[in-house]
Image 1 (spheres, rainbow, N blue to C red):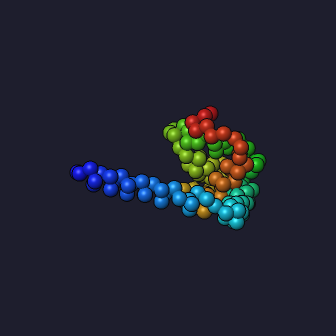
Image 2: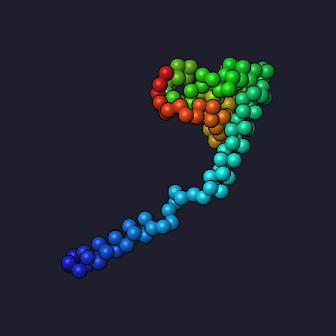
Image 3: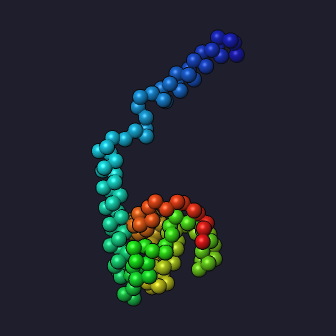
Length: 137
């Protein structure tokens, strides 16, 4: 490669870098964006709270709230972690399903089920401000 070709490539690379760091960035959001997204998130959190307090996830009249008022002692910030009941390291949704199958005697939810998303959103919202500590017991 000639000296001129190297200079041309370098100039092209520099222009790409400048274009990528220009005035329009992917992580710049308007206040309206942030408000809309927070409203949508809180809508899912509220659905999670409704599920948490409803015995409809199971078949025996038990609801999550009976063992975990306000998602107490769920510690979603510590997942994934080894869970003795399951005998392996699991994400929080697998532990939620263990509770649905066992104490609630219900049918497990798919990891991407909107109900599962809502339950996790509620749990993590209740623990906001707590630092992430995956693996902690």
